[in-house]
Image (cartoon, rainbow, N blue to C red; front, side, top):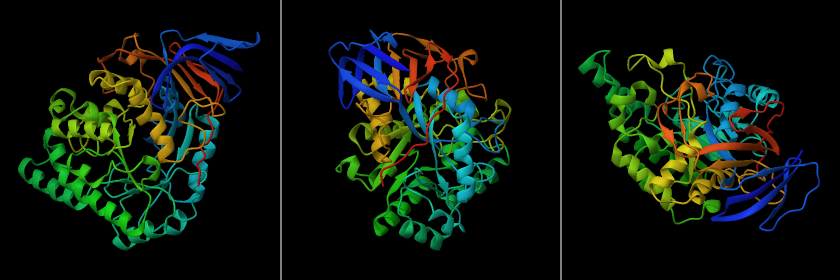
Length: 445
């Protein structure tokens, strides 16, 4: 179909201009500040008073498919994603089975081709003994290789030093890491169990998965990357201390070492554990207010490049447990864009800041082809945002399969009204429009 989006405030590449965008098929055909004349077969959307952004690219999600689909699935979580303006996602390999072979990787792509409303890519997983499979990964059609330097959901911990050396020296594509020192974490667990037994308070989580555990691991990875000229991307930074390992003196398209921060590490701090409990138990842990503030400042000054979610749903029953029994992770992909818009508003920052960190930067960092910007000839992944439409998050408007959100009860001042994926209108005024599927992301080598 053809769509004409009229009178929008177009947010793109550091500017906000009033204009009109013509979508023809899966592409953006024309962008103009002057009126665009169209035929009768074009669907016209009046976007007066609304902002038009590129579709968000979330470079870290766990959609739980295959093997953990009681928590979420490619279909259910991609629906939630587009409802929140996320038009492309990159999914992690710690599913069941773990994505440790090229065959399993391609099976996930086939499933997404049939079920995902959003565009998709899947990380190839690394382990202590699958280097041969890792090196077969095609950088043109796969977003990257994921290495767990700290054990998280599923056990894919890579702790063999020789294996790490080989991965960092031989892998010729982006390596994304979960960075926590597992030895330090296990020592901390033992110390807290000695003190509390199995009834360790949740407030101890940021001390168990400590700033030192994060820094130690990230420093090791950065040094390995520098030694081998590896393309390294550090996921979900959570500490002020780690920021000393990153630079804001190099343009993003020239960086070999990049960093991401997640929405929950920018929104919550350790003072919130008492109120939210295990709903905000993540790995790495949410830490001090000073860490949260430092992360946001680093995002502003360019030491941190990307905002993502680490969307990782669990059921209410799974989360409603004691510290050691409650799994880490939570659902965020439906509300990441409006949450970041709220933070930008709170800090007096324009929406161009949000578009840069959630749309442009992921596209640049991962070399995504023809997405992440509003440009003629690019895929029509677009989001209309009403800045004056309040929404309060509650179970009735949550699309996650798990049915809950850490943002329940919070009122955001903006709402995503329309989402286009490859020119298809998939979300309109509170309703999912079924019938179209996303595409596999491709990357410039």
